[in-house]
Length: 252
Image 1 (spheres, helix red, strand yellow):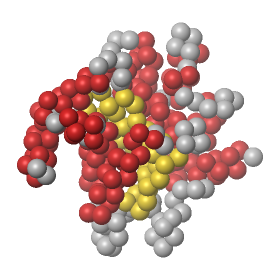
Image 2: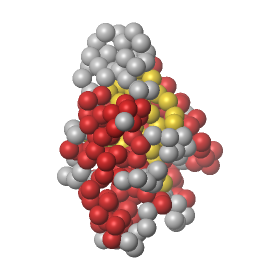
Image 3: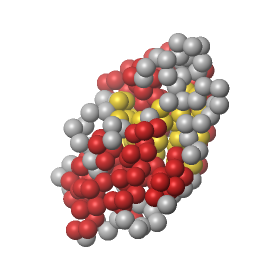
Image 4: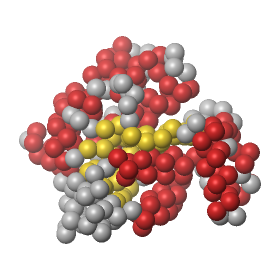
């Protein structure tokens, strides 16, 4: 049934740890602009955060409007077809309609790559700074007595960095009850849940906006950006350079 399908998308979340389950669920994916030289790439990590009721209402609407397609991926859309524009216009406002909050992290590698040594360039990619800045902003935004579950699309090249980044933050931030604010984090395969499709849409929209705001793809993906209000950080050049310099001073 319809309710069973929505329930099936959410049954694996909001349930562990069993003694004090998280109230907030964050669904994320990452997009990287690799059309040019690596040192010029833009990296975005993006998605939405919400509670159980918000995700259930969103899932029901999303399933209804996306039609009978088995999966929704931005890379598979037909960008020259008017149906694509209509679909994106219908789906884009849904997260905001149901009270989900945009969360974003982003950085441009050319803004700081000259400050890194060769070994650091391989180890400290834009994903680290994007994810770290975003999660720290979320924990500052969240009520101090609540907990968070993070679900990331499993992208193998980022998994180790994600585990290290989230693990470091989880060990440092606790709620008013003394428990870690990040209750758990996990990775799910691409296409395994419709709940990640909003993140795919949002991260792609940010990439198109920063690549060329006047392009067709940027205009058609604008609906999910809405008023552009969000939780997180898209680092400006001066800010990320100061962070890198401070990091090098603290961790020579």
